[in-house]
Image (cartoon, rainbow, N blue to C red):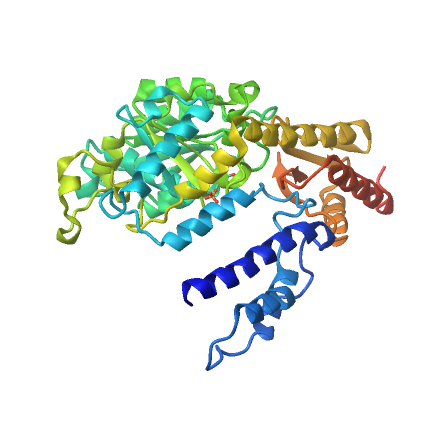
Length: 473
Ligand code: PLP
């Protein structure tokens, strides 16, 4: 494909995406086809001669699009949002077109320097502590996901807890990781990858009213482990847990970490975006204690997957834990110590130019545009929660400080599960579930930038109708 052919085909692809976005609301949110439908519709292999892009676009329409879960659909209320946006897609397109590798500063200086600048912009946007900015000992990097952020934080914490021996000696003692019962599954996965085994994770009890970690239970767990000769290495506190968006009490947790010399990682994968709004920054209290912090612009900040923003207070510790320098990567810039080589801040060597999509997003929306997006999500969730609370057949089961509402019928788990199945079967909306205090709970997470009051009201109408059909109340 030469540049002129690319130009023509590229316009057709952009048209296809624009048409997809403008027809989203008319599609069923999820596919009802059985497993294997896509594979069965595809030929066994590629054609002998190449095909025009139009042929691929036709098959996208016929085979792929009908069998997607449409995460940008205005009726998509499942899991957490995975926003994308026009500027994000365009930034990603430029990144793909440039095709540069940003593993070292020397392999593409602008790739590294724009990323450092974007991480400083984001730190300013969220009003994060100064220690995370690049002019200090700390700094930020884009990881592919919050799971990777938790993994590298865990590795750096082990290196510190082992007195700097971990990179050579590995896991030489019984190191321990602490998180609440609602900590994300990636914490256990990180502990396993790090060689601690699943039992390296201590699950700390939550306050049943808030679902947030209990500091007294954390202290007791750390003290018991120390008494048994184990080494507390890292606490992962969550701002906005996956189940209910509970906010762990980071100021109290941080004070305990400081007292015992334990690394504090704060996982704000979903709710971090809320801190662009000054009125929601209460949720980030205590971050001055954190050794590392991350959030996912790819969840709620209009930036397409993958983009996790991860900061450390001391980049030297992270780099020391992870760096390996083979001969073929040696270069004068690295040896001058005047540059950042992001390969030392992550698991893979190679890295895409992900800062471009952030740059496009931040410049297109501006601070006020991003705040308006967050505020709209919070207001829509509050509108939905008001309706739930006003219907005595239902209950709101957890606080809803952000854009997720947890709720259920005042009925048994089977009825609630049937309620979820019924509304999802309409194809108009898609909600998911969790358990709160062991009880089946529905979750409505406002996510798509296309969602309006009418869509939230429609979700509520469908829920009420399904409750009527089930004879609830
Ligand atoms: N942490 C929390 C609190 C989450 O809610 C999630 C995903 O929902 C993750 C981590 C994992 O995010 P990622 O897919 O970026 O690894």
